[in-house]
Amino acid sequence: MILERIVPTDSNTVLYVHFNMENADPSLISIMPQSAYVIDSLGQKIPLRGGFIWQPFEHKVGNAFEFVTESKPADGPLTIIVDQAIAYYMPLYTDPPQATSEELSFTFDAGENPQRGQIWDLNKIFTIAGYEFEITSAQAVTFSDIETPSFIDGSQGYDYGYQFAVESDPSLGLSVEMDIHADKCWLSDVKTISPSPLLYTQLCRDEYPKGLVTVTVREMSVTLEDDLQVEWIP
Image (cartoon, helix red, strand yellow):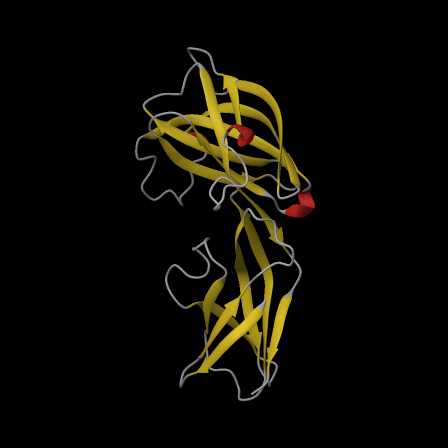
């Protein structure tokens, strides 16, 4: 983590921070801070927020971010701390791509009449940026299986799909996102059953995709728990 610039204002302090990783894998697209704060000269812990609506916590692409303190720090040195960050890898979408679609895809036969609750064993192992994970199974689910109050617009017609169980080293905090190769598939949900597995769901309109269903791993992320910090002395 590198502090590029700091701008004190009358009501807060604006910080411009750059994230990078030594010997980073070429498929790394972003290191996203999840929790960040400053400690001022009086020892006050002041949370940081993104300087724009989409930055830094919702915007995955890039490694330079603007932070704003939620209140005015005391005069004197500041210690900027990020106590959790997530590294995102997208080998298919880097320039140049670091993998082919075929290398990150798998297929299972859902048959001509898949039913809710039906399970298919997959046991497909993938490695991205040196991190290995296994997609162990797929299960036919409906929107009601993942529905929570956070879905404020309901299913929007995306009612049928598949939930994939993903196993990995629990210490990595690994997550994956996938795309079903079928028309009208979009609504997705990620849930972790601590410490494992990760459950990734993608839902489609009208009906379950039938027959041979192809799925591609679009993105993988791992959680960086070590404190990243840098000190600014005026």
